Length: 455
Image 1 (cartoon, rainbow, N blue to C red):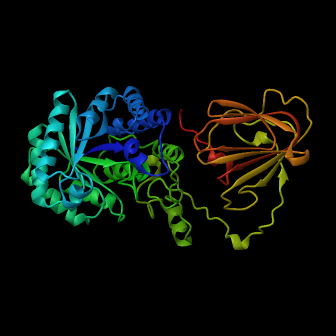
Image 2 (tube, rainbow, N blue to C red):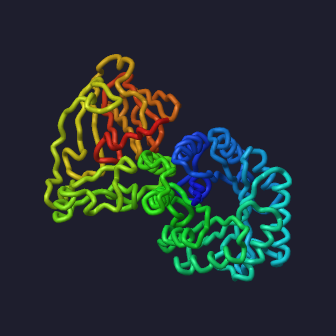
Image 3 (spheres, one colour):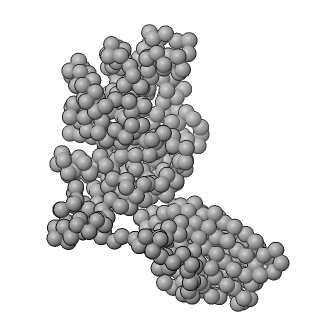
């Protein structure tokens, strides 16, 4: 059986935009586990007390086995033990560049001994061990054999071949993994590959064809540099080409959106499977064919992941007037909103400009008295947004509001600005005075901006 270890909660945090907190990690872990993956990789507990707590919270939240990262050092392994994680991922390498940059002053034999002793130490303390040959793609076959034999003899439960810089072509991946499986028929192998050359999924397919059982992936492919194999692409590939129907794919788009919000890493519209354009057809001949049979230009039925086919094309910008006429509209048109005090004007959205990437409203208050209980319920967006409060008095003073942001309630006097990161619950309430409230959302259709996945 082909098995998947999702490492969004470890590899994803190596992208510069991303730093999942404990609450985000727990929410994501539950959603990722519900997809049916076989294991979740989360964090490097030795980094800090906060990181240990994050891993501990994830272990407590899911029944899916959790693996945490550690260097081949006892203090790192002890930190993993503190979290309750069932598995530890130990890593080392003995190629020339690794000895030069990561194991300074140590010989090849000393690193092998260090690796062996760390694996034994972890096993003796009840941890299951995945032993990773880091930068395996740039390591000679003889050194690969030495590392794998060392890990196997020390008691590793699984051995991972990591193409840490995504350097191999798929046929090269197939050849080296086929050789290693032949040399070590008793070893359970895992494959981890980076997407530096855009070949991660192709290389993962080659590893599958070479008979590797375990495969590492992350949601939306997030990770260091260009990321790694995408969990959603891998799961749909396994379902459609390898008859692996054990995965729950109906929530793929919602989980992808949640990962995008919490990681702060935007997906390309052309991102396979989960991108905004993945099932959009605008060439006229394609549209005609799709109207006859939706298999005409579909690699798989989008209903598999609760997606839908769209034939909509935005009107080109050069064919639209860019001088817009705002209109007054009650906030009751929006979910989580009621009419509210003052006058609300829609300044920009897709109704005013087809294809607009922004939603922009302004609301005027003229000493309308007590704002009452408020007209906006707490909600979250899948993109960033901004509140601006500008009073009618000199220097924009004269407006008082209350803002709830991520559980923190603040009373603000204008002028005031509030940045609202994607995924953070928020609302506001008018308290008194005169002025203007401006709301900017980085999505042209407000309802498409709402993050609706179960909390």
